[in-house]
Structures are given as C-alpha cells and as structure tokens.
Amino acid sequence: MTGQEERDVLFARLFGLTAVIQSSLLVRTTPVSISASSTILPSALADYKDVLSQLITLGQKKSWMKESAWWTITLAVDALHNSDISWKEEAIEHTIQCAFLEDTSWSPEKIAIALKLQKARPDKNWRKILSPSFKTSDLFTTAHLPILARILKVG
Image (cartoon, rainbow, N blue to C red; front, side, top):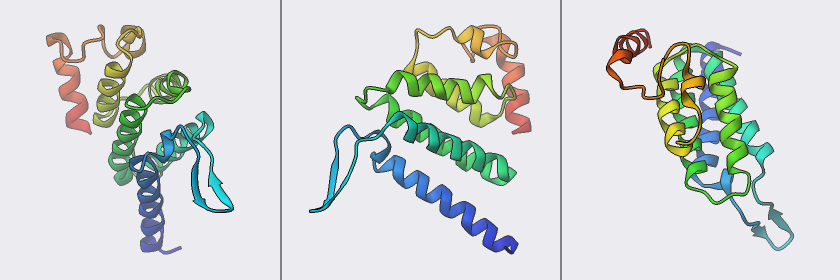
C-alpha cells in the first residue's frame, strides 16, 4: 500500500469503530432486526473487548492516530457508563487493565481516560492504579501539577 492508502485504511477503521460506538451498537441490550430473516444479537463483553483492542492497536500503529483512537476510547467509556448492560463492570475492569496496568506510560489521552473511568468507578482504588506516577487518586492535586504539565507538554 502507498502511504495515502495506508492512511485511508487507518482512518476508515477509526471511522467504523467510532460509528459503532456512537450508534450504541456496542452496548445494545436487545436484539435488532435488520430484515425478516436477519437479526443482530445484543452486544457482548467480547465485542467490547475486541473494539477496545482494535482502538488501542490503531493508536499504536501511527503516532498521529493515537489522539483520535484514544478519543474514541473515551466515547466507548461514556457509552459504557451510560448503559444498562449486564457486563458493564467487567468491561470497565478490562478497560482499566488495558489502559493502565498493561501500559504504564502516560499521555494526555490516558489522563482523559483516567478521569472518565474515575467517574464511572469512584469506589475503585485509583491510588494503586495511578501509582507510581501519581501519589493520590486526585489527578488535579497541587503535588501532581508538575507531573501533569510534563505529560501534557510531551503529549
């Protein structure tokens, strides 16, 4: 593929994943009939994990895709938080695992995900998840401002 073709494919994937999330197909609780003989089943945890994995991989492929891919992950977290799906807690735990425990580097996008997930799971031990970079769960405490500035400047 040429460089332009590769960019087109990456953006097409991102667009498709974003559309699935924004249409609520990712967190659908009931089947959807698309024709007399065809039905789309309710969403499953495996679907969410697959979309999250694809978005993380997409963000890792090219540095210029990371911000857009992680923005789409924030959409998925919002959709998850606002849904009534039975596997919500497992999906949130999986997102935490992928975003913070498997990759300990920090970026502006990861700070946004942390804030979204803290809202979704305020009872979680965020101090443990955010350490060693952050000493407390409040990312905006005065002690964290130099760390945040460094992350935001690099990002």
